[in-house]
Amino acid sequence: MIPYRRQTLRNGLRVAVNRDPLSKLAAVNLLYCVGARDENPERTGFAHLFEHLMFRGTRQVPDFDGPVQLACGENNAFTNNDYTDFYITLPKDNIETALWLESDRMTGLALTRETMETEKRVVIEEFRQRYLNQPYGDQLLLLRELAYTRHPYRWATIGRTPEHVERATEEEVTDFYRRYYRPSNAILTLSADLEEERMIELCEKWFGDLPDDGTFRRDTLPAEPEQTAARRLTVERPVPATSLTVAYPMGPRLSPDFFAGDLVSDLLAGGESARLYDELVRRRQLFSSVNAYITGSVDAGLFILTGQLLEGTAEEAAEEALLGAAAQLCDPARITPYELEKVKNKFEANTLFGELNVMNKAMNLGFYEMLGDLPLINREVEIYRSVTAETAADFCRRTFRPEKSSTLTYRAAR
Image 1 (cartoon, rainbow, N blue to C red):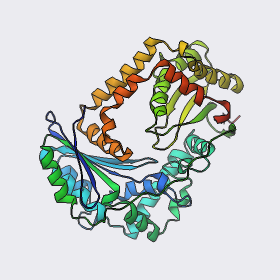
Image 2 (image 1 turned 135 degrees about the vertical axis):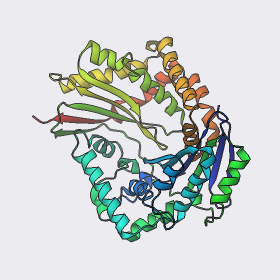
Image 3 (image 1 turned 180 degrees about the horizontal axis):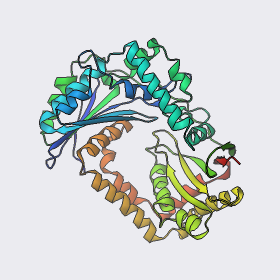
């Protein structure tokens, strides 16, 4: 259970704070409701570019990391398709250093031509090294384009092509910053051994006067049409082994399908004792590795089955075995009480351990507020506990349908 207090400042900034009497550290998390989903299809990669630019300094503070280190703190950030997150941990007595720095760069980022060009080169190089020149690097890029036809989830956070960032103009970059990096599009969350009222006062002190009319709304995105026919793509790449990936559309993050799908993915691939590894790797020796996971997207996501074939395994046999193992869960009688309880216990344990860390709590407060259901942060264990074998089987029957599959065969070039 994470106790919290929530408030919205007059400029639209949403604030949630948690008092943790057991920690000497404070966590400051600032989530911006902007991710790859918010980009122009012809100018992708901007959300990730700004994750880099936000560390390039402001008009007041040219070196963001310096004051953090002087305050004995650490900081970092990440971007995904749905949001961008910046976080700082430091001694609680230095919490105002973090609030000062974050409020300063929310509106005062120094977007000079030099900083833009420098970070554009960094992002382009990252794209090439991690996705274009890395074995299996473009696998998920191809899968997204195959599984989505309209929704912006069809491209990854890194973008569709490095040329989009390379060709970005100063005006386009500045406009992106002004549109999305503002109080009414942000969520500030704190966890520290401080009175909740005091933390809210500090948030008001450092952010309350930042200009914003508080009316920002994200654009409505195109809904992904229902998939009614199987899709397939086969590519050849200079990789050591062929891999097979099958994706199925599933419900959004706040739907009951998310919880059932997450539980099913653990039934299939929650360690070496789970079904896929036990049957396809250890017993039948068709794959060298297998996995099942969900994307966890805010909007309709994907349930993904994937595996790397052992040499000599026929692609057709591997696909049949992988889909067959998942299809077993369509029958509730084949889901044992023991394995169901095991994955539920694992989730509950992970939740409880996560609540011991101030940064996990601050991040989760921001995430659930972004979802629009902050109280869900304290209800999810109960929801997972309520998933039955029949619930899981019903999810599998509705999800693992041939006409809803997107299959990528990533073949090792001979």
